[in-house]
Length: 371
Ligand code: NAD
Ligand code: GLY
Image 1: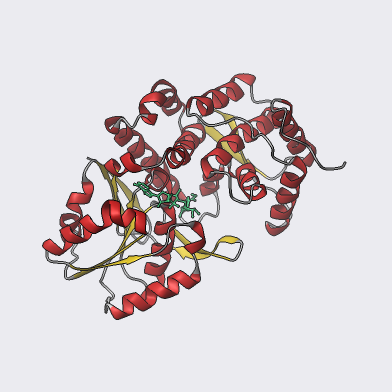
Image 2: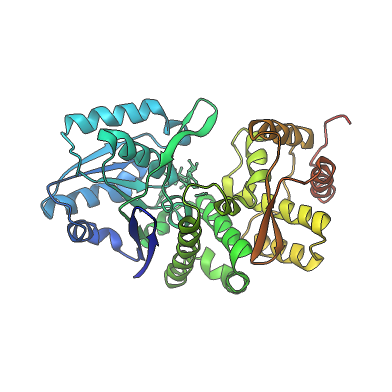
């Protein structure tokens, strides 16, 4: 087992990463000073895979445990479902010191985290992430939120967990597309912070995809460390935490145009390639950097272009996002591998050229707009 620590001005917490950690949750809770009651929030799929066993083991360790289910899907990360959880917590007589255990991927982590932040003005939150994306990203750093209509993560706050427990054996049951969503974020960390880590990923991508748990433990530990250091520096996301959005400016537009049918990892992967192509035009980043980004993306089984996407619509989404963000599109661009910078000075023609370059390499990606 490996352990990272996040140290913030007003709180600190540990991130434990290891195989079989779900069997030790009751012990970890007792160590952290919790007793009497716990609440697990999960979805039906994760409940049947891990939730029922976790509930039984907490009960046999003396915790009165309730398990609340939310249907599986992004659309249930909403105020309405948060409301149903408040009612259930109240019926269970959850108290100020009753910890909420968020067992699942980022959807459950964000929703249960939001509920923990707001129920009785805040009850302890334990993140138990079961997707690779949640283990390397969403369970760390305290961003909790719900969606509202079409607006993603629009209602939320920063609420740090008391503990993060990442049992990497849960990754064995993860569908391959979900695994790739996490791998895209892992690649992102390498490009934004650490060239040696990119070499490690280049060398071992096959082992990562085949779920070598020893290697994954090391990789998740390193990513949790990268994220922890960034969050320590800029907890409230007013400066350098923005670098975590590398690949996400384009990625978000790709996802939006596909009506969120495109997997997040695929959108971020092409988004990272697109951002690197922008950097090549903007600050003359060498071709070798573009090649490295494309190579790692391909090794991960992700794509470097998206057939069928509509460039005009992508530009429109970016324009819309720009208006919402005060008239500027903010990009995170690589200077090289392991170093990025943030800029809002990229010209629209450069963005269009980059999208067209992706289009040229992908014959069925149509440009349907007018000049
Ligand atoms: P998810 O939570 O929807 O989980 C993906 C799928 O995997 C679901 O169907 C889920 O039931 C299933 N699943 C979970 N664990 C499993 C397991 N071990 N075995 C089999 N199936 C399993 O998706 P996600 O990618 O984990 O999270 C995406 C969400 O995270 C989005 O809502 C996004 O906004 C949010 N997010 C938050 C942050 C943050 O900092 N708070 C960062 C990134 C993303
Ligand atoms: N996933 C982006 C952040 O935590 O800031």
